[in-house]
Amino acid sequence: RIVRGATPLDMALTKEKLIGDYDWGALCLPTVPWSKSTRKMPFFSRNDETPLLVAAVMGLQHCFAMIGGLITPPFVVMKFSVGFTDVKLQQYAIAASLILSGIFSIVNCLQFKIPGTPYVLGTGVLSVLGTSFTFLPVFENGIAAMKASGTDAEDAYGKMLGTVMICSFLEIFLSFIPKDKLRRMFPPLVTGVAVMCIGIGLTGTGMKYWGGGAVCAETAWKNHASAYDLVGFPPIVQNDTWKGGGVTMHSRIAPIPGTVCGGKTCCEAGDVALPFGSPELVGLGFSVFVMLVLVELFGSPMMKNCNVIIALLFGYFVAGVSEKCVGSTCKKFVVDTKIEAAEDITFLWAKTFKLGFYGPAVFPLLIAFVVTTLETIGDIGAVYDASEESVESDEFDKSIQGGLLSDGVCSFLAALGTGMPNTTFSQNNGVIALTKCASRRAGVACGCWLIFFGILAKISGIISSIPDCVIGGMTTFLFVNVFISGLKTVSQVDLTSRRNRMILAISLGVGIGVAIVPGIFADMRASYGTSPFFPCRGPFRTEKDCTKGEQGVRDGIVQFLSTPYCIGTVLAILMNAILPPDMEILRKDAPISENKA
Image (cartoon, rainbow, N blue to C red; front, side):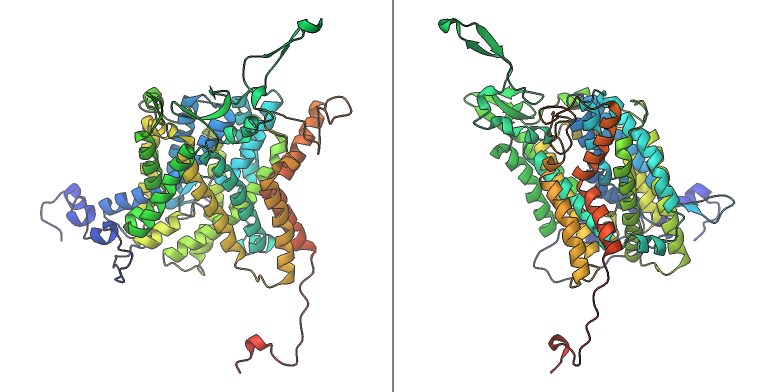
């Protein structure tokens, strides 16, 4: 109803446009596990003019649904690969990831036509972008190899960013290939193997964080009874003067960076230092799992959409009120020094890295971009299903092309903005299904929330102060969901087929095996170039040490073989290409299983 004399602002700020008549009870009231009643919620299609408050709340849910997975890759890379003790660097990486993901999500939801072409940039549906887990192992392995060969950690990260910028053109190129041809080139069997291998490798990493930290886990062997007395800082003094000899000083095995507690190699959590796998650390991580289950049992739809961030904050709260006491001395698992050290606000390029190029990472990165390309096609299809839109329309084909182009372009721009590659997030499809809001306004609101949280640097300070064991409880849940996504993709194929089972057995056998025992090809931590499979130096090298050129070739081969999804995906592609189809069985009568009698 138009009121005489009303200004455009008055007309825009009506109750209907601001609040609407949304049933907030259906969204916010808790669930009773044994209840059989169903909730009724209004549905908003992608182009509906959703009331501003509804869009803001729905956008906040999407923000919380993705924020746990969004902050993990940059935080893990910066803390465990680049700057173990550089808290401000970790905080900046988290903030940059939030800001970049917010900007790219807004672009992806709005969709822009490329002038003079039939092509678009963005999906035009409620489809958000975030930092991809797929690239995490590539960054970790590449930076570790470069650091071991003498490259500064921050320069190594810059070289990975420069390599990403070059490799991102593969996904940009693939965005112009029809989706049906892409699916024929990389069928669900191949894609599923790749995603499952990513999930398996990352889940093992999540358990390392849960026990106290990845670095701590990989050096826990130093607490073995055979090595225990050899670890520490003071040298071992061997006095042979009593038999006419001299005094010899033997260097001890260096512990991990940080505190050595009682002579043991320990993991740090606030002021507390405990050995890897201590019950206190495992218990704090388990508190995250407890809250995930409670939210699933009793949580409202809104809480279920935000279950990861709620569980993480609960684990953080439990750690914050817990102390480790020995006698009358008590120490805290959470200290506020990292929060106090954080800036009030920040933005992109507050910290910069010198761009470069790292050849051995090219092939793993190209495989990662192929994997994210196929994941994006599936994710956009899931968005269309949840949004009750037709996947047999020209709009869907346009969204696929625009979404893939957006992934590639945004990954390129993310590297320019000092961030890791971005891809379409799949967990937000569940938010659409639960809230029945597919409006693009909610996606734009989500992007605005992400940018807001990124600029407030104290948010990054809070996240960086969360103990590794609590982060591990969250990441283990997130990482295993990556595996489940791959399992869902593989379930689309005929698993009774001998050919398909052979492809799965060969590719997953090696992929899972490498994830469990990476040392079969890779170097041990802090022992670069000494792997017996391809030694460049050390006791298993019979010739002089490798040259720089040989090191580059060697690093590329070792990274390929020791990265689960690289070797697993290539084997799946190879087996899919060479194995013949199954034999057709001719029967006189139908098999018993099909005989209704």
